[in-house]
Length: 265
Image (cartoon, one colour):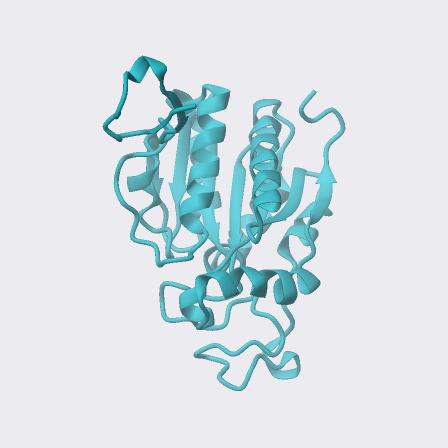
């Protein structure tokens, strides 16, 4: 069978070709600025595919973070805005309360959400805001030079912990999603990973359920995603995927920490 990728010039009659890949409508046609091997681009696509499949692009609003994904609003082909560092949950709260019939999601890294934004996400969860949080955890501050983040692994070397993170002096890795799962206002709290095709498919399903929780008005939903950062981990892209499997998963196991009854039904 002949196949055709989007934007390719067909060698034969297009009517006899099967399109097996196309850009989601919820993504623009801009090339991203992300480093080779970075997980952000694939995660953007997963979100866009879910938005297209649910038919909600016209009623979806994204909130971009400060961090490597600061230009996310350029890549999503939908209404978006930019929040101050860590304040995406607060901005999303205001948007959702003014436009309750819209789907509102934040896209945040671990530095943005778990560090300077810790207070914002904590109280948004306590209030049970009907928003969706996509939490990208690569265990490091990416944009600013690879400093230690709240999620940095014990012993992991960064520019601000060159000898490796010492829990006795620099604290332990923060398990934010498990903490949020204990709050009554949270409807859906899970962790997924991008280190394999199978896990990437599971990540997309989790994103879909997170949006479903918001559509059903159940409370705040959060999907934490273990992601690769080859540049600041100082490894090759393929080795970064193995690093997630061998180093991050033991500290941050994938799983469902809270799934509200009836979600997705």
